[in-house]
Amino acid sequence: MDHTLVRAFLLLFAFAGPLLIQADDVPIPKTSAEKLKKELFAEYDRTIRPSEESTPTVVKFDITIIHFDLCEKSSVLTVNGWAKFMWTDQKMAWNPANHGDLKVLHVPYDELWIPDVVLYNSAVGNKIDQHGTTYSLVYNNSSVLWVPPSIYETNCKLDLRLWPFDRQSCKLVVGSWTHHVGQIDLQLSTDWNDQEYMTPNDEWHLVNVDKQRNAKKYECCEEEYADITYTLTLQRRPEMYKTLVMTPAFVIIILSLSVFILPTQAGEKIVLNAITTLVITIVLFAMSQKLPAIASNPPLIVLFFGSSLLMVAIAFFESVLVIKMSRSCGAHPLPPFIKQVLSGWFGSFILNGKNSVQKKANDEEMTGQGQTSKNEGASGEFQREWLMFASAIDRIFFIVYALIYLIKIITFYVTVL
Image (cartoon, rainbow, N blue to C red; front, side):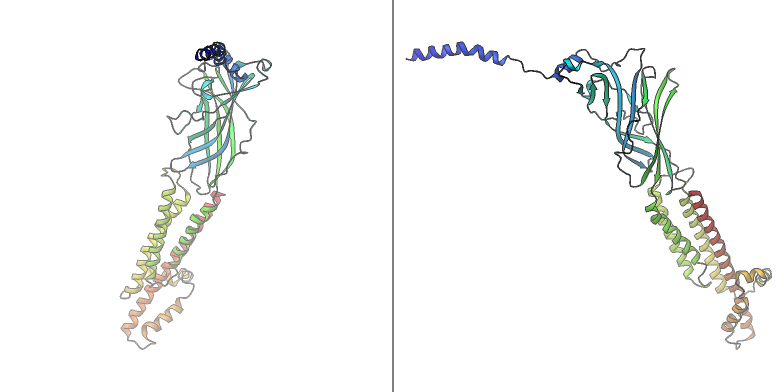
């Protein structure tokens, strides 16, 4: 019985063994895409330009801007977008009827020839790969489409003279790094809407994007190299700065002029000047954190605050001077030429024609309604004269400062508009 079972198993393996081995050796069927790719890339060299040496490869290029950001401290414009490349690869052609009606093939970035198009004016010199490593689309008519996500960082020369109402112009210069026009003819493709997919920037508004193809010779080489220059015009959104910058400016103007309206003998003049100085210093410090150090064409608003700080310093000295004159100069008479000026039309204009009223009020206050001695009357007269002179200085400074601030405001708005 045991011998019968052994013979049965041997017979089973004898017939089934070859069948099992044959099943293991049966190859897995390949898809049309696999067969096509193996056929196309059998002798393909991705480092060689896919055209005859005498024939340039026409590469159509464009950028769709998704987002942008301008850093004023470093003067760097960062553009996030999609770069669009289209060219013809003569080695990538097939008959769809022979490959399962397959008309497009998805090929990884590192298996296909890719034009070496980079950003010429890059702010990061050692970063050449601005494009993502995405798949490309290869069509049966030899055309190739590659749309990688891209990041371009370029230096931008800023003109902050009209900050925060300024408009900036930044350029992106894109071209082949090693191939001249006879090898890669870079052309501009304009069949995409630049702003269709763009995320708005909170601080800047993209006013215009100008595109221009150029062919230029460089000192290193005799051949021309093609590039596409994108000029981005950016307009700052000034809504926030109207509150953060313009409001302190008007507050400073009001505080500066209020110093000259206070009574001549008031010690509050010193306190008000000190408060104005503190406000200007805080605003200038905040601007220094926001703006870069600019050697030429500094912002007009910064010049305004800087000159206002100097004017407040002068007003501080003037306040100390008039307080001293009105309080401690009564022992000596006013110089005759100053008395002559104040008694004429100029004095009447500056003091609003109230010389006699002031004289009577001060005489009554200083002489005690006519009951003081003759020496005390003379001292009171000297004090009144110096008080009038100090008041005249305050009025003159008020008019001069008001005119200066008015000229500043008119000049700024005329320049901005």
